[in-house]
Length: 110
Image (tube, rainbow, N blue to C red; front, side):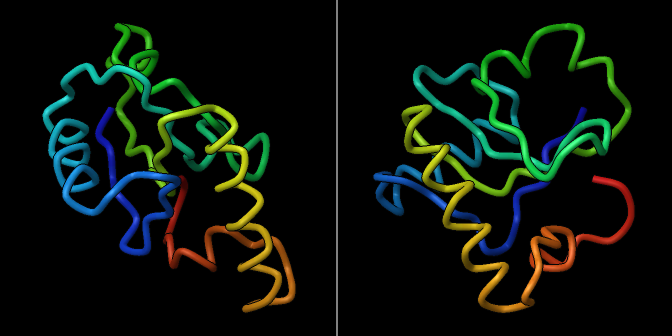
C-alpha cells in the first residue's frame, strides 16, 4: 500500500514543521506514536475512514496493491473526527454535496 497525501491536507493541532516530518514518516512507512489518519475508504463502503496510522503498517494493509488517499492528520481520534466534520462542511459549502473525491480532486478509485 502506498500513501498519497492530499494537496489540501487537513490537520488538527499539529504545527507545520511537525506536519512535514509526519508526511515524510508516512511516505517511508515509519511508525508514529499517537497519529490518526483520515482517509478515503479502502473498499468504497463509506465516505471517509479514520485509522490509527500504526494499524496501517501491519502486514494485512502493507500487502494491498492500492494507493490510500490521506485527507487529514491528527494526534487524537477526537481530532480526526473533527477533521471529518470540517471536510464534510467544506465540501457542502463548495459543492453542495458530500462528494469527497470531487472536493479533493481525486480521480479513479480511492
